[in-house]
Length: 147
Image 1 (cartoon, helix red, strand yellow):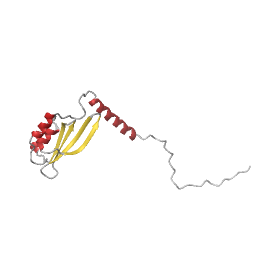
Image 2: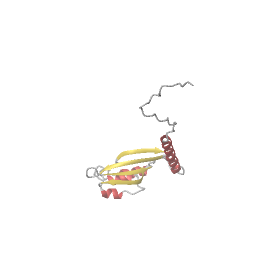
Image 3: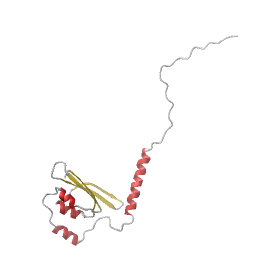
């Protein structure tokens, strides 16, 4: 009987490579796309029953009323008292006449016929400010810091 000897197998000191993982779909594009679809659906539902025009039309009476009112003389700087006078449902012209300036346009969005704007006014002290959110020219929310 003959025995055949084979040389010993080489011993590797390297760490074994892990088995390749199967290609997995990335989920974040689906999450972002789904979120965008939900926001569009909400915007469509919110504006679906509205028969109002997308922009506020001014009649001669409204323009005359806006020019007759006397704005305050503080050049658009807002105080806490003025901030408390601003109420939901007020027009941008009414807020301008209270504060004395139109405020700085911070953001604006038109989505499904709904125009949303945020306007900012500086306060009397450094860093003090107020933000008012308008939807189709009407106040829907407000916030202040340091007034």
